Length: 500
Image (cartoon, rainbow, N blue to C red):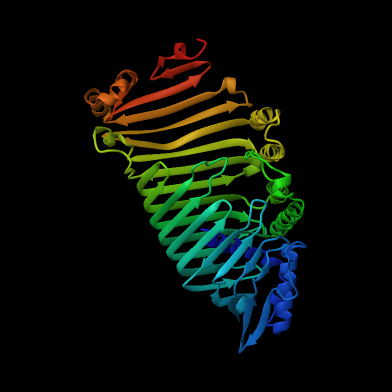
């Protein structure tokens, strides 16, 4: 959801408050001094392309506290996009130890963002019926900072050249924590949940989607857990400066659509290329690791040619790069799968009811990955890209893995894991091992005999059954690939490989 993501992005900037002038961290200052300190901090954080006005933050005395007002209407940094809406407001209250409490926080509603573009103008709007937010911020990051928020009656709409989208949620709850991690870094943790999330989109037809049509999605409940490990606040300002500057320069250089027709959707726009290059250059050692896990319950999805229901869906992604070696992991779980488009009959029973897998990659050189991304953004047809991609692991060993594999098919469950190692980038000398097991395989074979539409799979199932080894009520296949040989439970199948 765009608003929650925008909120998270804003909250993630709060660790950069270490750059706040001393007036904010000292004894309670006059309102004018506090306002000036906050303005100077925003200027330093966003840079020359941040579009900071004369009074981007307004502070006024309110008894023993301060009334904070942050106007949002106007241009979005130095871009052609504009915002319209009431200001964000809060009460600032001084706490002991140099900390500040933000009470009665009110986010702008309704909020409207207008985004001109070569293909037309898009308009995004967001409204919130009720909200309750409060935070505790330690600008020195010597102690923990927190944000807690609840939103009710959340709704957004998008109208643009690519189509229309509407999203609604009955409730959104979020809890964020910034925890000192030593060395001037912080760990950022977010947990969030929403109820009755629904989204509908009518996508415009284009070269990629000739008949996109209406797509709808809903989830009765969703949960998110996010962790950013070792965020470096002093890297945020250079990153924002680079990205905002690249957007401003690239947008100013964009030709009119009639002057630059293109149907090659593999190529990034000038804006996208410059932003990617700026982000790669400035990101550097921004953080030590990132992990996000999302869980959806009672999911309904309908689109052109597809109608699906899920009892539970889980998606996860994590990345870290210890010693400059990239490690990626992704998680997927689809449970309670059903489809209204499958007719009643024997084949319906063979729709997989559960699919789970966790692919991962380790051993990639982070510096090489960044260079390949830059080159691919500049020219996706560059003949050297394939060689660059192959060279990614030549500084060490590239390892590909697949964990937590589970597929439920009728009365049969397949589980397994696999690992492939490519030493020195030589794919011809790869080594692999896997363990696959199946319970209820005999039941699946019996079904293949009985159902005419499945009989073509019977020889394959019988072949696999013959290769398998029975252990603890399951059929097990231990697979090893090495030195040009493929062995399954000590049976060499190398003669089945191409060229053998």
